[in-house]
Image (tube, rainbow, N blue to C red; front, side, top):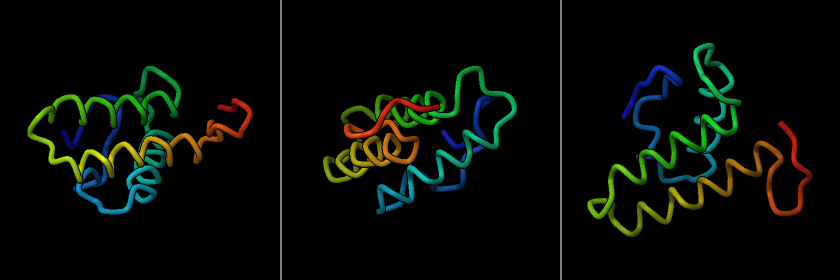
Length: 88
């Protein structure tokens, strides 16, 4: 999934090897979007979860690990990490 009504994603975003880069790209796409139905954090996290779930068992374990790490990076970028207060 490279485009949606909610977010226009950077090409190849889910193939990046750096979880931080994936998260940063998703964050920028979510903040830039004018058509999303939820907040930027929820939109970015939803897109990442959607990609992981759609790939299912076809997603290699190494790639899934990188994408799971990207979730943590996304939380940190939005100030929603384990040690941060909840912010939008």
